[in-house]
Image 1: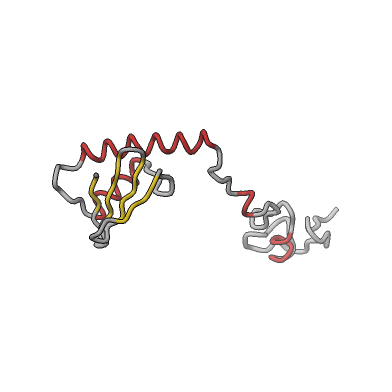
Image 2: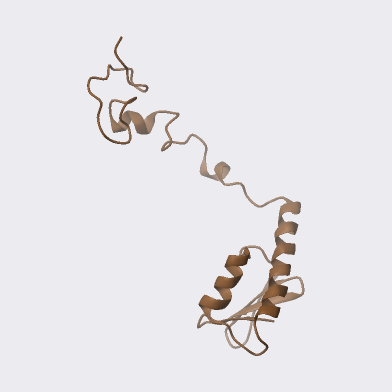
Length: 131
């Protein structure tokens, strides 16, 4: 009994080298097969679970608040941390820049990101400073 392609059921003559070798006769059959890792039947909007739960958002806000408190203690008073230092530090601690309570624009052009009573000022040149 000869092996057959999983997609089109044609007999497989020679094993080919490549990502589709063994069970498929061509790259087309591999890409269009429903169980293929490259072809997903799940729409992208369903695959990426949105942060819509009130509990999830509250959990992220509390974590961001704690990280901003630690950022204030980490940076010295009056010091402006560089983009690599301050923002990278926030990112390494797990700060989620997409979730915050409110935004503000400072008169000097800096953006203020607030999470409850803790804030962060990001300057146009790339510096970050806790508020």
